[in-house]
Length: 366
Image (cartoon, rainbow, N blue to C red):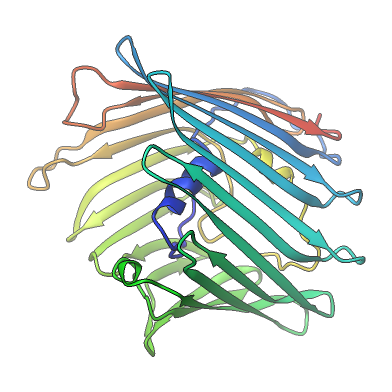
């Protein structure tokens, strides 16, 4: 779950990323003893999801992801294809092609990606290109350029600073917009650009500063390198996060006008995410994720308060997953059942989301 919200050009990219990064499975571990990791690498992911209401199938979604590696074992390419069907008819398709170029020494120098979609209403593509620069074997700068279908561009220039021991101390990102049409300027939170500065100690974030029009804001509260509270600009709302001793997210709360609106409780498992087998980039800094350690929750439940004048919360999502692990603890299969009650409080017929994921690996994963 990404807590750092970076503005994107065009609302379609938000939908696209949700579809491409996963259909939202949650995982419950089976008892499998972990063994020592070998050169294990994720190879493919296949996902099938159905949403039913009573005897009717409302939606069927499929996602296929493949990973390719260089002869040296670095990630070379990720390909994703997603299809959404409603009542047997294809209504949305998405694809994502992400690749890296490396120099002779094994440092990533260019990352290129293209995301395409076709829906009942429109079609388009978003391209991204990131270039990387190094000093003394450490990543010191990166420039990300994003181009939307209307040729609007977003540029994010990043600068990395280290101490004498090679530990990251600061990351500064400056975001600017080019060719932004008036229609998008009205939808963009900071259309004239903004900058962010992260401060680190021992690989953990200690401070975050957002600077807009010369004014500094500190919307995040960090403890032990983790987000514990986020103030949402303009809306006056806030999110509050709780973690376990292993830095895994266990609760996500959304507050509005000083009142708790909804919350989700997670039960973490020891299962490892398939993407945790991806190789680290040479020269990139090691940073703890301020949103918590990657984890596959054994289950989650979401509760909503529909009437803010009453203390009553209703269970709107109740999900559990059964899955099989490799000897090294990576997921082989995952089967999720999520009971959804997202309309009026406790509607007579809940929707059932069933999600099955199957993974294959290269190397020694057992």
